[in-house]
Length: 145
Image (tube, rainbow, N blue to C red; front, side, top):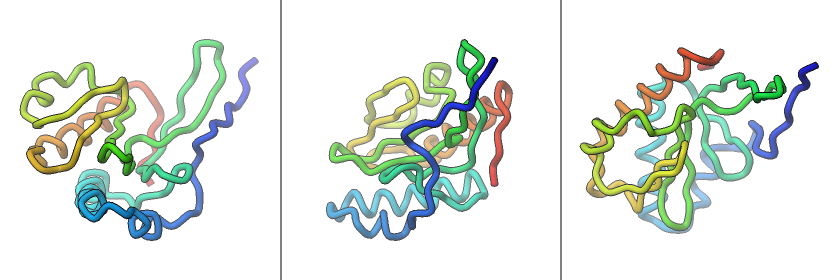
């Protein structure tokens, strides 16, 4: 029998604007404002805070191998000490042609680590976010509201 999974990082009613204004590093704050614009343009939805430090867009329902079900953001970003981190839930493994055009970055499974947005090809970043949402919709129930 499946059960609902309650993740530590959940959607909250915290203010995205307050979070962005609280970023002390001026360059990182500026980069996050650019990311706000990019994600709004690509997703067409208002951002929500997920936990204390992740700005998320939309949500999706996932199922674990044991049948348990949970809800998490469809995509988003966060300001980390090392720079902005961009999340797309299908991960970045199938996007090598786009990754080559992106600019300097490091990868985790669903995490794209950037030092800053300088040198990042923003149209390619937009394509990555859009493709991530499109691919997530192929395998999961996605709510972009």
